[in-house]
Length: 121
Length: 108
Image (cartoon, rainbow over all chains, first blue to last red; front, side, top):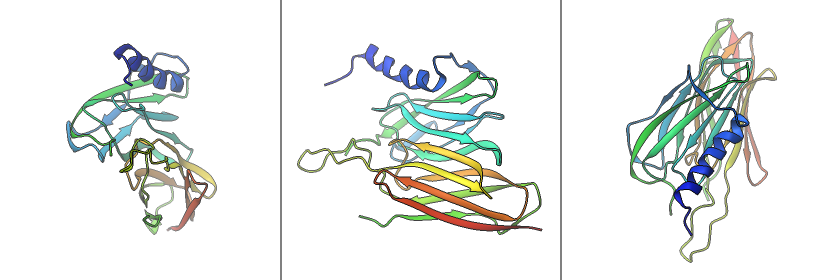
């Protein structure tokens, strides 16, 4: 069983659309840091920074399931920055989308080349 | 199975209104539900699905985790410290268990 390319793209867009409620994200004030090359896809360090954002969600478009993590920032967040470590199955685009207080969304993406994939057995 | 053990790093003191960096790590397999055992059976998913940090009852961050978060989930973020008090960290496991840790901080 394998997804056809157009089905795969639909699944990826569904993840982002589910987060944005169908609103098209624009380019804007959001930064995603990730390595250009990740030797081990099991643990890839990333960080996001989206000043003023209420929420930031990260997607790995080449993973079996594109959703990765969603950060919701509260009143006592010292910044709208967070770092974590993620799994990437293969070389792919990692996308970060931020929800702004006015209901708009901004996004950015970065390609990460993965030497050894991080989702299999 | 390894024991689940949460760890956090929080400064002991801060100035009023200071922004501090917090680092958290919890030992956990984060079984993705995608892997198979030697007999070809899917190993059931078991991940930490939510992590929260509060200070004196107010939210700092509330994180929703998916299986794409690595083994031993690690988070680093910043918090504003308006007064002396306590950070409370909570991790929610797919199996229903909840792991908690608190750290006091003193405003000088």
